[in-house]
Image (cartoon, rainbow, N blue to C red; front, side, top):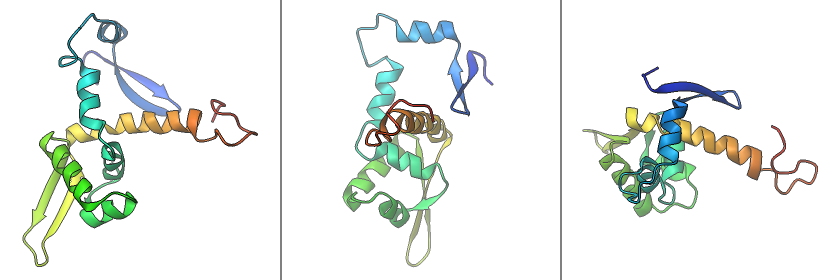
Length: 145
């Protein structure tokens, strides 16, 4: 594990985190400009509708456009194209085109994209713990998994 990082386990998932002093400094710095805040910069990249779900689906492996479109029920082809292009420009998604008839295009996560999978995992844990059982009176939101 690189210097400046420590291991953290959340619901059985091992996560990489910063050392406590680095995290405290990052969370409590007096930066008035969100342009330099790593949380704000990451949020800008992943906050678009469907973006985090595209990353979730690509975490399972290489996908073609139509596979992503089917798994993301309700997304328009235009929106999917825009999100994939944006993620490619950010270096999160790799687009590979094959010279075939008909043309074949596959999408996968880059190393930078794979680092976001931990965020998706944390969101899944949070959702399971606090959101998914809100309608079940026998299991209140926030109860242990």
